[in-house]
Amino acid sequence: MTDALRLPLEPLPYHLELVRHLQAAEAEPWAWFAGERLRAEQGEAVRLELLKSTYRLEAAAHPALHAAAAEVAGRLGLEAPIALYQAQGGDGLNASLAFVPGEVHLVLHGPVVDRLSPAELRAVLGHELTHFLLLDRWDDYRIASQLLPALCQDTAAQPAHAATWRRFGLYTEAYCDRGAHLACGDLGAAVAALVKIETGLAEVSAESFLRQADEVFGAERPRSEGITHPEAFVRARAMRLWAEAPERAGAELRDVLEGPPALADLDLLGQARATALTRRLVTELLRPAWLRTEPLLAHARLFFDAFAPAPPGAPSDAALAAELADGDGGLQDYWCAVLLDFAVADRDLEDASLAAALLQADALGLGERFRQVAARELGLKRRQLEALDDGAAALVAQAALAEAEEAP
Image 1 (tube, one colour):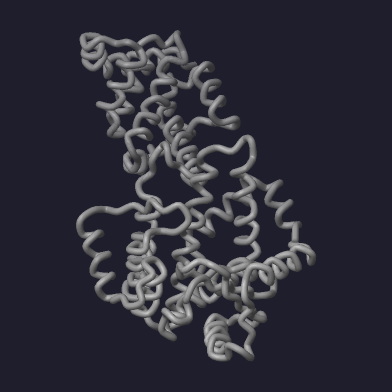
Image 2: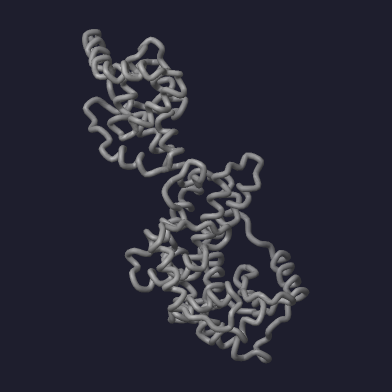
């Protein structure tokens, strides 16, 4: 049994997919972080800082709080020793984890104990203990959580690294919200605890807030704009779906946290998918034998070192059009730019390669956008585009016939 499967909940697909991607694409830094362990003195530093900045809530003085923490730990299958602290200063309600391997150090912020009901308090404790379980029991998650911020701080970092780190965190909070519900066994209490912490109110209605969340989802297709945490209405609805309709929960959460692919907001996984789609697009374009000229194959290998065209007789990529359509205008322009790039890469083909790209764009549902991109980039006038449209099929057929006549 793997570390991941010993968690109280199944890890989310995003976490699993991202771990696989980082292990393959960032193998060397992954191995380095996998070999690193928090040193004893680092744990000592965390403990010392907590003693300086908090009031330690010892079990003898706060037996009910420790009993609640022990009950939640039992529900989550956690046996590590638990130390509880009250942060000094600040009136806002919250709780946080100070991570030390093998030891739970939970910090309460503001009047959490006084403001929350017993079930709500268990939900908050469950959320934070689930954070601990992810880090302490699933090595791959811990490594990813250390590697991603390091990649973001590298001088070669791309926007995709920051987008990945943000999305990784949003999914983590949604996962730990499930731990909150599991810990208290009461959806209403888990939602009420969330709303109290977000608003500071002493009394809230979970049912009212869930209806409020439903109104948002009924009015639009929301997408989270949170930096570290999804919005409270997103988290509340995600908890309810996980409890009441788990078969829908994953798809809706992904829709809200990721949305349709957008060129300016691709994370590392989105980049990998876009790269794979680009390869399939180039393969589909170069399917005709007459387009497999040395210049065009060399151009394809500038995109992909080991590019090889589809073997003769291979079926066309029937799913490509639908997958290319699942993206914003920036991605649609990118696909058209790739087609246009190949259309002009072999001057000896003259207008035939441009005609082939145009027909391929039409087949993929990109025709009108391709015409716009071609007109803009090549400076084509309307009359030239119309002439190309009228003669595209004939040009392609003539090029294919010429190639067949020359073949031995």
